[in-house]
Amino acid sequence: MRQPSARVDALRQQLADKSLDAIVISSGSNRRWLTGFTGSAGSVVLGTSTAHLISDSRYYEQVERQAPDFELVRAGYQTNQTLNTLLTALGARRVGFEAEHLSVAQLEGLRKALPDIDWQATDGLVTRLRAIKDADEIAIIRRAVRLADQAMEHAYAIARPGMTELELAWQLEVFLRERGAESLAFDTIVAAGENGALPHHHPSDRPIAAGEPIVIDMGARVDGYCSDLTRTFSIGPATDPDYAAVWQIVSAANRAAEAGLRAGLTGPEGDALARDPITEAGYGDHFGHSLGHGVGLDVHELPRLSQLAGDAPLEPGMVVTVEPGIYLPGRFGVRIEDMVLIGPDGAEVLSGVAREPSLVPSAV
Ligand code: ZN
Ligand code: ZN
Image 1: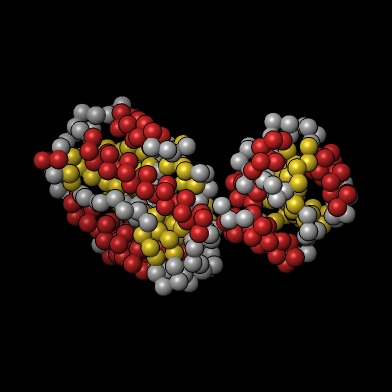
Image 2: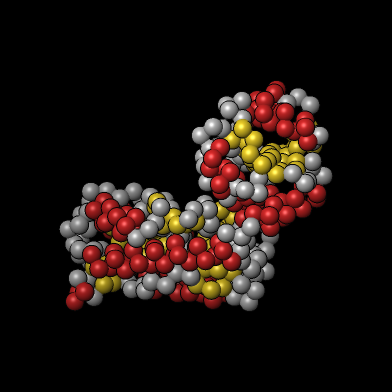
């Protein structure tokens, strides 16, 4: 891992820009990114020259081991009282909190317990920093991507007519876990036939038939970092006469986006790279979601490749998915998703597993 201090420095710059004396970070992924601490509870208090991590007795040893750059504050279960004591000792008055993570009730609790603090809502300070990955993060992400690639190859090898969606999903989960994934990045999607037209279908006990398109969307979590991969294929020649053409349109749109993505484009411009050819092919109304999203400690994080994203430009070091899809209700869906690394002049496609519309019968 990069030394936390580089990340701490970046966040301190944000404090300076916003004239904050300190910020309290309590969301899990942001806390982990900033400190290295992987536990499920704790509040980071980052000041302009101080770094504390308040946690409870379950985590004292873990904090000291994983977050040596942060001074452990032993809170017991009196988190707000401990926070009050600490901020008072630091002389902090203007203190930021994470507006996108704190509930209204939690904020009211803070205001009540710490009446002298001038609480300032901040939005996305850490998540925007997290969007740009450093070399260590990219190395971990490559491992998570490779594992998903291998699992998809396994799917190609074991998928048989008569298997249920759930059976195939379970085989993929076993494969990923046995090869070192600490967990799935998200619940695996295996969606056969008309189920493939539901982008977030949950696997069922429906058997997979020969010749029907199967959408598999899965990812591994490795050292905290996620991968996200989708392929669509049929076992043997597809029975739906439009499938092959639709698959080619989606695959070409995916390639067009991968060829065109680079630093400097906005989210809407990135989205258009795949949306325009799909619209020109007459399927614009059947591509209902955005083109992609950032991937890191969270499987969905900044930036967004979306018509609704703002005009913040893509930057080198961002890792995003490219996942165009066409969904024909009652018939089938096709989605092809890779992960790519944004560079100054283009994008490196990280996902490497082959894509084929139909597995040849000899391989079945
Ligand atoms: Zn996915
Ligand atoms: Zn995705």
